[in-house]
Image (cartoon, rainbow, N blue to C red; front, side):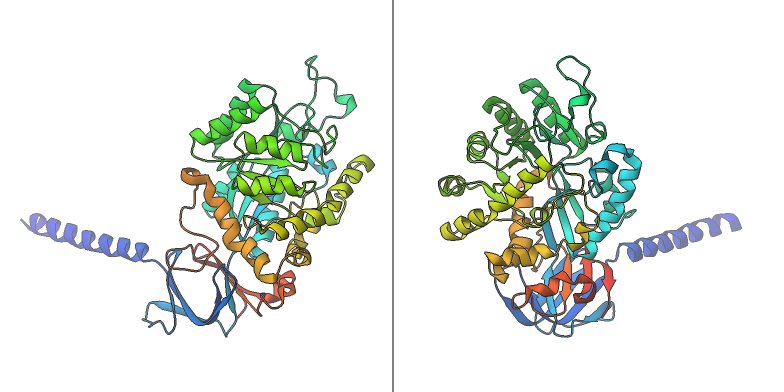
Length: 444
């Protein structure tokens, strides 16, 4: 009889305790960031604002938000609160010399990448589109909390043709036609893929999508880092490009294309590519064609300000040619009012240069206002990432500070709309770094 009385009471007690424990675990953390000037991803600051963060989202933005006991208060001290920066053309698994990339196994490359992604986050980047690399597991490790870094939009390995931008064979590597080609480490580690013809293109695209690519990258022109392709060549036949964009569109996302020259840019656009990477050697007529077709321009400056380690003299000459074209590209873009411009650095094979990534903000002021550069690095780049549609692993708004957006926030000591050079010293001037509602740095 006593046993019968105790059992139901005990069960009820355990049930209540479990219920309370679940409620406690599910209660989201709340922060109130007070007394800040909000940069909202446009061209202005909104002064004297409070921002309420609940869980991983922004709950409210207004003046004098009422506090409760469960809210942790952060005094912003009249500093600038900005959305986290977004870079749309990065190489997270390639921040070592070409020699190291050629001789290292995939685990060493992965370990180095964990340092790289931490560097991005500590420089204020809360989201990155990786445009050539096997970053699928790196993304998972960050999302699951094993590694500290930004949100990753992985493209998977860049896809090019034989003698294209993914083909890094030297003469000694032999002929792939004869079946005795030996591929470089980047191909073996699934950072690059070389295909020819529609069936191989379809297989490569679908394999990347299977692994979790949020968008697909192909090369439709020569590159400075590859050995066999001058910058003026056009790569992939129209039917190969169309196969890539059709297969990617079937998954509800888009294709971006590496290409510098006019013919390649037009071929890419005519066959469904939605984002052109680089475009350094473009003319006004072709840039107007891009604008007419509502295509994104994803340019970079930083990578062209130095010769990457391990480049041959021929590669270095191509690199200098690409750098020389930047002034024309951006001058035309300003002239015709090109608005769909994203932000990125394309820094590759240099672990020291990657730590100066925020110099990109200053480089761009030769052609754009501080406000335009800030917009490129926040709301513009977020809009480009959102093209991934249903493949977007982070569906809430980014690059803005508004209700319902991700709590990806930076507290900046100073006003970057007046002095953007302060961003080149993130150690001192980024006082708070928050991603997904989690604080990774607070030196207030």
